[in-house]
Amino acid sequence: MSKIEEIDPRVKAYLYNIGYHRWSRVHAKLNRTWTMTSNIAESLNAVTKYVRASTDYIHTVLDDVRRYILDELPCPHALAALRHRDESSEQYCSPYYTRENLLRTYEIPVNSLHDESKWNVPQHISEEVVNPPTGGKRHPGRPQK
Image (cartoon, rainbow, N blue to C red):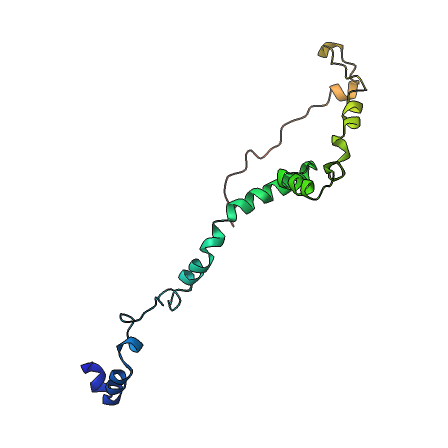
């Protein structure tokens, strides 16, 4: 307080008049440190800590959705939602996964290949030489400029 009095004695009197509870964090009744911090990252972390805990669940749901987009088979949470709405999951599956299409897959017989010496390969194809790609392996990491 002596340093404040050297600068301006009116400030010292003002601070004594308003009381300790108004000008000192030590005597404050609530914790303001995480809202008045100079580091904005700490404030954001305090607000988003509950949301960050649910990101693992979001990633699993997104993986299921990506799998549905690729395979066209509904994921477990989509099937549960369809059951809840009393809808059939068959209309949301690709027609490739129906029983009829599965049976049609095996209608045409697939014969095994004979010995390579018995293959009927045209002359111009058997004389063609296919070399592996040139240039070797690509180096790991980001290419240099």
